[in-house]
Image (cartoon, rainbow, N blue to C red; front, side):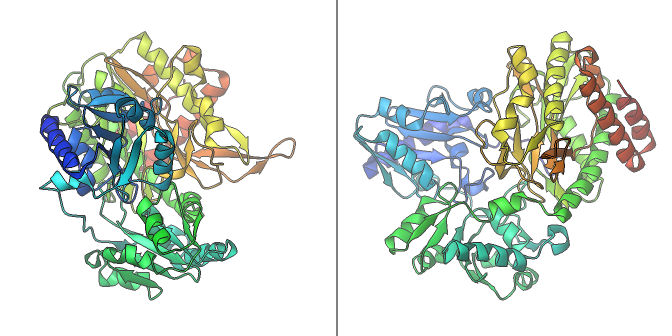
Length: 597
């Protein structure tokens, strides 16, 4: 099994660890400390060594932070985690704080009259610290860079990861690393920059056409890099991660150095040096500023090119989704054959992984499978453990969010399944969520439109019933890279224009705490513009994911003719594409599951 089910954190240790941290802060003369979820690469998924927030508090979510003061410890979480956090931390010691409704600076000012709050400059960006300093200005509280206080008390902290890097074929990438480096170096020269600092692992892997094994579920290499204006790259990665074959793949124009040399090398660069103030650690800017090197603040130069997939990458993603869709169809056929009340969540996760592994092409899961039965489905990023494992009961809903990493693509799919008859309220909510997914799937929009402009399409049917969901409608997805990728999103917070080749999730939902959760998710890719009736060039989406929706939960009388037409056409496409890849039993099941409404 790739996925395990033991609890990854122990909230009972929170009070002892919190007391030890406060003692450490007092010894340093600090009134508080910031503990983010992030690592030095600002990753959403972090190595065990960097699970500081989880180790201290017990909270296992992939986003959030904790601010520890002498008399308060606030855990800042957004809407995705507000149910989860309450069940994972000692609420007598840690207080969940709704973010972004409550800003960290305001929270600190309300609880601290003065003193210094420490932070590790390798774990925070310039943007983060500037915003917090502005909020604290005039209140008597100062921020102070400091060695990490959690590391000082975490005596059995795991070692840094040493996953082996490996080449990613140019045929799958669609462009050689040399061509990518030359193209981006030309951009640096045009901007008058001598170099760009790269700190995001997926950016470095994309640029060098390599993949790694330093982070669970995401095939990335923990490293830093400097891209020079002549196309050379200085790569800072532990030598144990790079074998001879990968070294030969990198070539002579990639100079390899130990990560311990990164800060000192920054101090030797001639400026201007391009740095992303939203993703690079503040320590990068501090090293450059201490050396008197001019900084040009600009986006990581890899992020946008990486997001716009090549035709080869899109083709690989299509093939990965055919393979993965067949595995999911085999699983759904198996699930429907199980008598209600005979399964639990761990059995569901185990079976689904087995069908993916049977493809003989699975590199890894793209994240730990979410299998939320009944009320656990309302925990948006739920991960089943032996302690939380719940039976899949009759007349309930089962939410399954899962995906696979294949060398030709990354998948992420959510389906909500009826176990028996969950009742008319569940069917009504399911149908509204499905209508939102269909509305986004059908969208046509001019160039320059961003995710914030499209987000409401997925919510309109829910809003009419006074319902909503507390997460973005869609995140970017990498090609055999991170399952959550920027800068593209479909969210009220995203102003990045969508471009051809960008891959995103389309995942509206609805969650009723203590009762059930509903989420439906397909991956979609932005098509090149096509001219329409008045000659205006419009973009649209191609759906990559291939799996049926549960017809038992659809109120057909609520669907418009256009919605029925889309759904029937989608189901016909699913049946035609997957049937040749299925066992006879799954093929028969799929015929029924994709029958026209």
